[in-house]
Image 1 (spheres, rainbow, N blue to C red):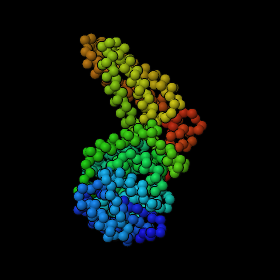
Image 2: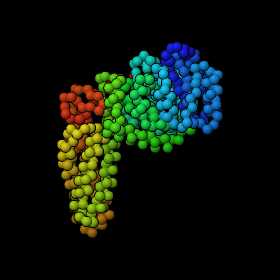
Image 3: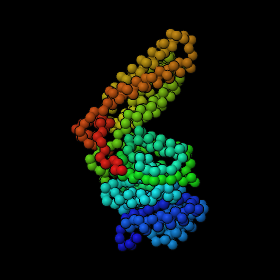
Image 4: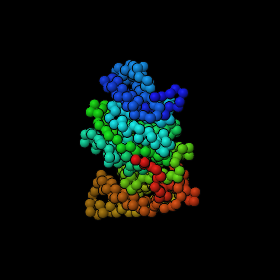
Length: 425
């Protein structure tokens, strides 16, 4: 039980929205478990997210009847908003949240908080995707969950296995540094918190859990997936551009030594492909604009030149993670050499087209050149990977947002070493 004159060990937050039918039973169940099983001081905080039914009254009644339970009422919806508000104001050493439906077996609660209370880890998550986890849910949700987490690992250079399990904990110190950087107020908040934590060199502990799907879940899969993809793009861009000051978190509490998470070859291909699609569309538009005034070959050259410059800059930053101005000029020069090869491919396609179809229309030219540009894009990736932005193995460990002291090149030129303590499952 919680002593008023002692520091609080654990604050367990239960975000809820319109849960009048189940809130009382689930909070009582959680309360009973904590009283009989937890060896540390604790509190349950019901975070009512602007419910429109009787949830707020039920939360207040529970707080009045049950010791160690309090209710907080928020004027706006959003799980992330609720957690940021309650966690940010809590004095507890470890901040926890569990889904209101209690889908996760509470037996995992003590293993979740233990490494944080001991100082071993900074965050802890329940994972439904570990080999020893026992999960009951439909095939559709299972497929979506595994696909989403695979996409995170391949495109964002992270190592945690389950971003969205509603069973997480964070130390107050880590929360104080990370919460101001988390922009999402809804379902993507979990993912954003974890991605920033790993990129800041914090240790994420994983606990295999037993989990039973709530068939009455109000989560809308399609809209949530769309918002998650938007969030992934926003966070990736923020990390790549340095807009998110993650290095300051590492300087304050990051685990040392540490090498920033590395995006593997699949992640690079996906990022390069996305940029390639944008470049191809831009090329087609520019060619269509230039062709009537300056002719096919000149229009092809100019459109490809402009898109090549933009393509090199975008890939330098987003695909291969090169930051800062050091080496930028040489990279553009090398990029122009790659452009020359790509131009030869597209120009050759026009020569072949005009030789085989003398009366080809402008629309046909655009189709042929678009296809040739896709081939050229593939060639670009190979040359960028193997030549322009090739990795060089170095012994130095670096922190996020900096470059090795022994080299004026960029962080992307360093082949990352294993991240110490990234997962402690």
